[in-house]
Image (cartoon, rainbow, N blue to C red; front, side, top):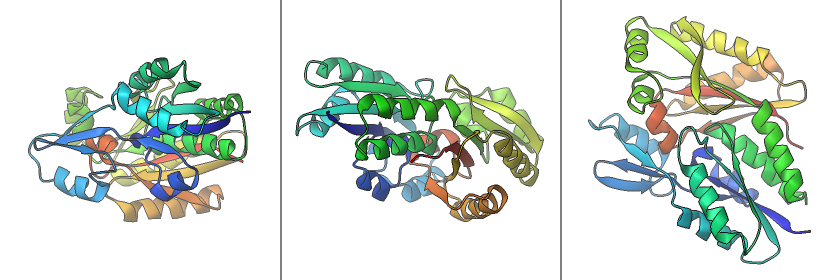
Length: 285
């Protein structure tokens, strides 16, 4: 039976040491800022990015990897032979990354097997899926078994998040301008989530950050899966707040560990500084 190698993109926001431990290949997206292009998590790191984001007048832009970028990653992953590849990527509603991976799949289909999945989500909500699949691969599971694990995660995981301002989502075309302006004027904090189709939407709207946080935890509690689960907290430039959330989640939900991960520059471009979220997903073996 062929071994399985898992590939993802940089928007999965998997800590580097965990990706190395599980032999996960990460293909970076690009951030374009002040006339220069950077590889997400490679030539620009989150700390530098968020500092510069607060200083620039023009909003950064992002772009997906090319199909050739994926072809090169796939061939490198399969260079030792007898390898199947599972490639899991940012929601196709947010980016053309998934389509680039599909094109790359068609370019190498005569060389080895590649299965490409649309995670229909973003940041460590992708990462948790990728990590579960990579752990299964490391334990000798087949490609079909790894795909089944990933698809179960995609179906059952839930993500809820708060942004400090809707400006970045609005400028990136994820929400309407009128909604962003009204929310800002009234100090309304929408609790955001991602639809099964992979698009951002407001689950609820609460006045003030503290009340919004309380409501987000209630929604998280209402949406835990009917099986052992894990919870992760993701953040932009607000590590201290993320650690506070992690402590509260451990106490409230009785989970032993809460993964705390930093949102990288590409997703950060679209949600902005001060963003924080919680992800609940089935526990991987």
